[in-house]
Image (tube, rainbow, N blue to C red; front, side):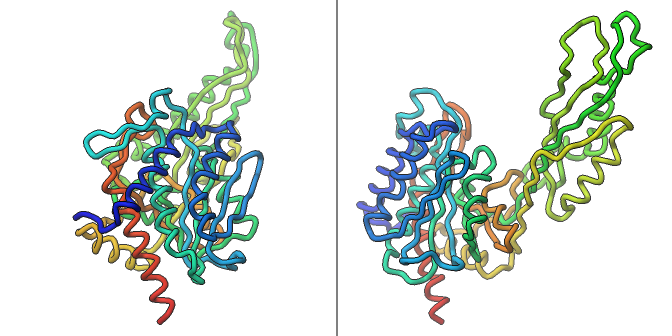
Length: 376
């Protein structure tokens, strides 16, 4: 089903997407990150949107809304990010082939941001509390973008994070625990290993115990494989000598927990599985997201999407996470919803152009429906 967006709007979305992809907005390049933000909000600023700017730890972000003053609580808030993983030089020169736009960050998520911006543009005179939040640190956790804005008082009833979902709706995602394990041993000369206690062997024992504890998570069955998982990211020791028994070793773990289990239960499983002499330190602690399938906002989004796309979008639970999860800390609900794309973080990242237009139309109609419901 083809969208009814005018040729002018379609060209504007495509033009903004191209401009954003051309900006090398990678972590650490603040000038490029700011350029991407200003490029994205230029259209909204020109039609009278209020633009709030934030900076935390060097990461800029913006919040745009049509009212003069920031709403105490947004009825609907779009969330997008403009930071990308580094790509090769040619990827910053977007190309189109077979109905797809290729370029770094095209599906994650510069085309998506362009669609969200243009969906909001038509509501410059609206007094309904809607807006868009654009950040530049999602790839590294979202602490200094989305979470920082929340700490500054931004609240929302319902958040749509514009991640590419093939025009389906992710209503749940896993929480994140990054853990450091530290094993304390006893050093000795390598010729007399019995005189020491090898910390590397101890940390290896701990890792093997955890792999057994989270064994089910190592046998994936696609998107429906909904269990808490553990990834061993790194094992290391400060020892660099061949002829020394290492007395200290570390392991770094990425644990993703399902909301039904909860962080407390997962941490308990980790601690009980560790052998004596191994301590665990929590490095990152991010909440899971769970939005009820029968939430009126979710059901309305399904209804509007079906009208535009011609099929009912599938509700599913995401293995990864988005910045929408941060709103769970303050009682907000959110989903991930976006166009069709593929090749994330590869040399051939792409987004389906027609699906971007459909995405923009769904969002525009969704805002209209939210306004109509408020009027009633």
